[in-house]
Length: 264
Image (tube, rainbow, N blue to C red; front, side):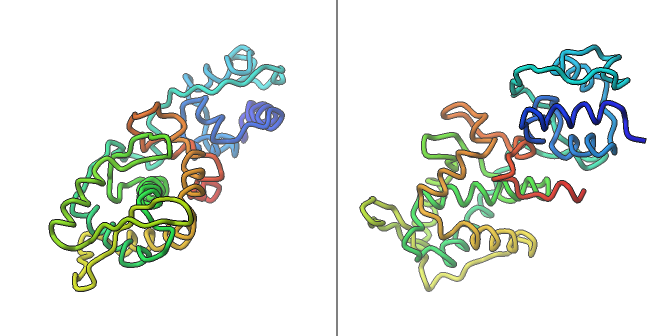
C-alpha cells in the first residue's frame, strides 16, 4: 500500500517544477532513495518526514495522514546532505583514494586513443578525467582513479595532474607541445609511440567505462565540455578552489546524471 503522503509530495514537486534530484537534496537523501519514496517502495524516516513537513508548511500528522494539500511556498535548496548509501549493509568510500599508477595508466590510454585529435588539449583532458572519475562513482559507487579535483573558473581541475605529467615526461612516455586550436593557445600531450602502455591496474569494466566516456565527450571543444561540467552538482555546490565532493553525484540534474535510477 502506497503511503498517503506520496501523492502530496509528487503533486507539490511537479507543481513547482522541481526535479527529483533537487527534492532529494532538500530532504538530505539520495536521488535513488527519493525515487523509491515516490514509487511507494521506501517509507520516509522520521527526520526526513520532519524536514518535508517544514518544506510543505504542514504538521507532521497532516503529512503522514495525507490530509492537507501542499501550500504555495517558495522552494529553497538545502545544500546539507547525508551520505547517500544505496547498497544495503555497505559503506561507500567517498574520500578520494588517489591511485597514482592507475592515474598514469588511464591518462596514457586516453592520450594513445584520442590525444592526436586537434581539440584534445589540457582543458579537455581535465574535464574528461573528471567525468571518468565522477561518472564511474555514480554508476558503480566505487572509485576508478579516485583523484582529487578542485573548483576552478573553467571547471574541475585534477590536483595531481601536473605531478603526473612531469613524471611521465621524465620517464619519456609523453611529450608536451604548445599548439593552437583555432585562435586559442593549447597545451597538448603526445605519447611516445615506442612506449608500450601498461593497463594492468584497470579492469575490463573500467576500460569499457573509459571508452564510453571518450566516445561521448572526446569531440567536444574545451568550451563545450567546460559548460557541461559547470552544470554538474559537485562543481556547482563547491566554493572556488574547494575540493569537489564525490557524494554529490547522487544529486545531479538529468543533464549530467549517467545512472538509470528508475530501473533500480
